Image: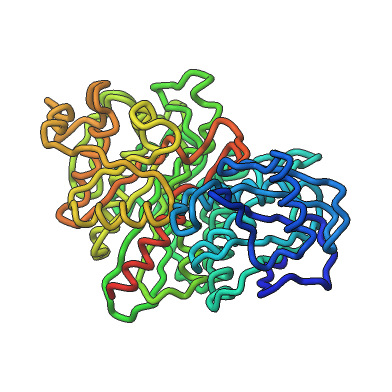
Length: 489
């Protein structure tokens, strides 16, 4: 797809769609670059009472035939002034437009944007890069089709840089979504690692892949126990980006359970249907690392991905087993379906020993977090409030929904074991918090944030502004976080 910046209306291209964003306050505002036939059409809709007025509402005209445009899509930004629109508002409106106009292959689309800052234009570029990609990757007759070109019409000075930045973000999210949406018959620990190696080769990242023998040498007993029941060997992938010389590294750690049957604590059938998505944390880290490398940010970052399959067999780990994690902590297994934390335990310990100054981990870790916060929010847990505040600020700036939950020491009491240092689960109460308290045992004093993305990582339904299935949640937020680290450095 060609993503083009035009400073004014382009009369040289015949557009299949022209998208015009309108604001409906005391008066109707149309982008300054809109040609007169588009302005007249919006005025006619307004006079007839047919102009969409709520944020995200649309009106289509399929036989327009003027202003070198075959069709027009009017998208409402509501009655707010541009400066009052949140990043989430813009992302939703732009995503609606992108998804509505990729209805057939090779569309040429013009996008008339309101006056906005570079970050708004960046959001538009992300949305139109993502729009054509859906979860129907195995369908013969796809409902989403690649654009031939998208012309974003904006006169701001930083337009080209903003659009390139947005496209980088969109490509990263698409990489993450593609990996998550593919079935476990395609995405195994080994094939995921191969994909990571390809990303590294194309972007200049340093890539290390640890196989079964190397993981054993690293004493990763907790992670290896989870992998035992599967015929597929585990992997750990470490990607490194050095853009700031000898500055400290920030580490991002992702849970990569490529399929989760629950192990001997077997899930019911309904609970297994979407468990190809239990590697969403690792896929998010891979997408993030690709974006950081493509953007050439002046930071030092490592991405760690622990990749296993949790299956049943005569070799599978059992309830009552006592595992020894990489840092020496012994763990009594009370539930083999609480496996993600066992994988993260060893990978977090590895990242700490490699000297990461700060850590963020991402995991589809607990159903409890979805019960508490619903599908749209990620849960945040931390051992260092100032680091949590940086992550929360980045998420707010990106327009993604994150909510902090408590980490009182009393929750750790649920993890006490009579035979080992701890159990891998507590009671049913506060399950997302006890999972985070478990992970805290493996980060020491390193400032750390745990993001439980079990709700928003894989969505059960499709809405006008987003596809069902994999969402690519948190990539925009974490890119914002990395950019803020760059600014402080």
